[in-house]
Image (cartoon, rainbow, N blue to C red; front, side):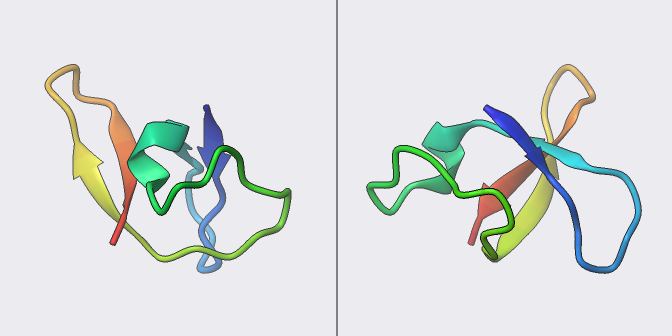
Amino acid sequence: MGFIQPDSGGHDVFVHISAVGAGLKSLIDGQKINYEIEQDRRTILRGMRD
């Protein structure tokens, strides 16, 4: 679990590694990924890999 920092600035987005998929077990600090922002039922913004 951790946060993704958008290239365009703005607020960091929480992401759970299970949402990243592609068999990854972790992300490297600074690693670039594509994602979409989704709001969950607790009104928390989170990143989902597309």
